[in-house]
Length: 326
Image (tube, rainbow, N blue to C red; front, side, top):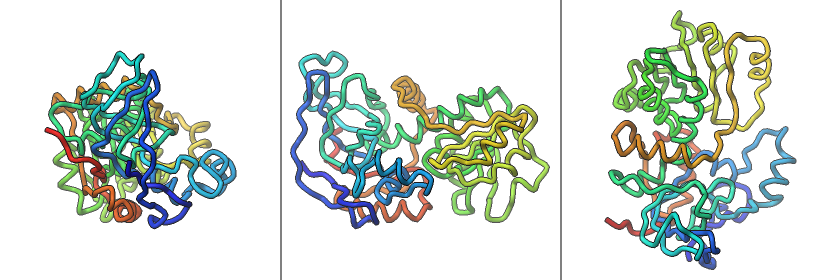
């Protein structure tokens, strides 16, 4: 099968298209023919070994010394079950599915084997494979963190980095939870965030929200770039500050969590199939929708990575791998 191999740590040129052996499902596994995957910020971090200096040694040991140990990157997909192992009962040949592969990665390829109890669900019936592939990472991350805030009807929530993959889902999910949502983004993305249901949009290029007198019940930094201390000042007493988007240990967060009357959450979103099922239901009932910025072919993976490296993508960048079925 055709796959993209990360031959070393470095720039997008480290990604090379090669022929590799097609996987064979074990007794409890399904073989998925991949129709679409994505390029996430996590993928580009692994490819470029973009980790904080304090994490350098443990990250090398975990990821690989000279190149990624899992050299086929990518960890979300949409596709069709091509075959199943003899013990599989949850899926059958022909099922259209969406999945997250976690740390096994491997979605920059034509096929992927996964255990039937992995984070796999049937594809939402009302969207394309390209759209479905963009649900698992951004959607589950936003859902996990917003649930931590226990949002109540009418509470004021600010989404920092509202135009990214996690941010576009966070705006929609917070609205679904009944919040009054403010999205923070650049000038060019204002109309997009309004279209997702945000009650208010702040252009961070022209306005510093921390300098206003506005306070929020929840501030969710989806990209890990906000000033923690400034955000804390803009949160109501007993409010919540959420941060995802960066693997670094933030000592300001640790300090504020010990000294502030605000709840502070910074952690990794767990891999839970229940969360993906919930997102599938939201999509099928038109409560949320995936946002696609650009679509590339597998052969254009280097170009796609260069685009994501710029840090300006709106929603998700998708890779098509096989010809879609109807």
